[in-house]
Amino acid sequence: MPAGVSASDFYYILPELVLTAGALIVLIADVLMPRASRALAMVTLLAIGATVAALVPFATTRVEVAHGLLAVDGFALFFKVVFLGAAALTVLMSVRYLEIEGASPGEYYFLILCATLGMMIMAGGIDLITIFIGLETMAVSFYILAGFIKPNQKSNEAAVKYFLLGAFSLGILLYGMSLMYGLSGTTNLRVMATAFVGQEHDARLVLAVILVVAGVGFKIAAVPFHMWAPDVYEGAPTPVTAFLSVGSKAASFAMLLRIFLEGLPSMSADWRLLFEVLAIVTMTVGNLAALTQTNLKRMLAYSSIAHAGYLLIGVVAGTPRGVSAMLIYLLIYAFMQLGAFMVIVLMLREDVVGDELKDFSGLYSRHPFAAFAMLLFMLSLGGIPPTAGFMGKFWLFGAAIDAGYVWLAVIGVLNSAVSLYYYIRLVVFMYLKPAGGGSAPTTTPALTLALGVAVAATLVLGIYPRLLFEIAESSARTLGVASITAAIR
Image (cartoon, rainbow, N blue to C red; front, side, top):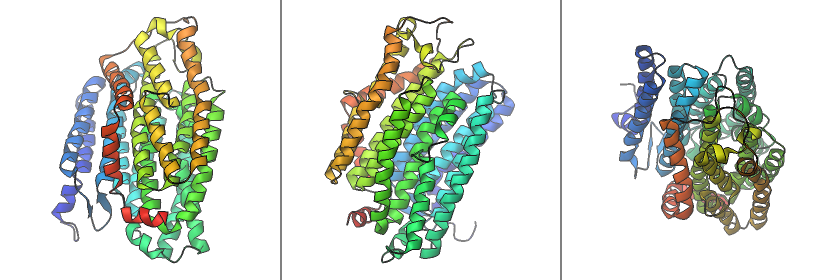
């Protein structure tokens, strides 16, 4: 056994080890069962299920492992459950998509699991090196997945743009991280927080904060670092777009919270100001740009940008309630965003791509359940009760008001009102426009199951959100409470 590594370290990273083993088994199964998309999907789901089971022993654990490289706590556990749930729903919606596109399922499911592994490492990382390893594991997987449909020119273009801009943003992020290391002498975030006390006015540290904010801003698609999102969302395979918009965003916010609340609490005055500006600009630009979109994937891309702005309100609040509100909103957002993309996958047929507004004309008469599901997801994304989206925004804006940012909450509410225009416009096409031509939408048992789960979660979490609130609050309390308190002061 390598020096400095104990058996307990391997025990605490058991979920990551199980997921890694599952990804390798998928590759082996692909050799034994080539092109068996449904069988490989089942193997992938079993790997995800085994990883969830491996998380159970750590439900109440709160330790640092591998000499401070990873934290096993409620905060990391919450995000890991979100990642694995999103991965499972993505796999379910991918079965039909891969069959229609004729793509190789083995490498696809392997990359989905690798991206999920990177996200899990990011959520638990309390060291800059660990966070970087998780970030690159996730990013490289998504670079390949974005261009997975090789004959599709838009897919190839999406992959190239995502890779080039991702590499550029990574350089900015690493430069900021290197300054943080040089000024503190450590890469451990919790040790770094103590080292930075008294250096608040050091211009080099201020520059480091700006660079890290810019690097993280790209990953969460915050304005003005959002230029990649519309093209990548439109060009990438639809299930990949769904997973990218949910999993990558959640992992990036987990990284953001770890770095700024645990590593830079003494610099809260600087990064809060930056995130205030980013939140306002991101919400506004995202919603205004979405108003004119006719392609649903691009519309949901700009919508995703706007939702990143909403989530940044929780970062600005910086309180335990603000963190718990972000956790709540990220989980709710996962269900309603994945659900919307599931309906787009359902609309894909041999003669119709299914991602334009006109493709949804008269959907209510052709597939009532799909129309109802999309109606529910649009209302939830817009924050209309009694959907889960309303409860998420209510809790998020309430956290901002409690922290003294009333005006920021008002801007969030106004932006939500603007967003209703383009969400309701889709509803008008589905229910009031005459049905278009082409074959009728069809579904599969896997896609129907995934869509049913998303619909049920969006309704149940809107009507009875108490359990989710309690879990999120408990998870938020494990995120360096002392650091959060210091940030407030």
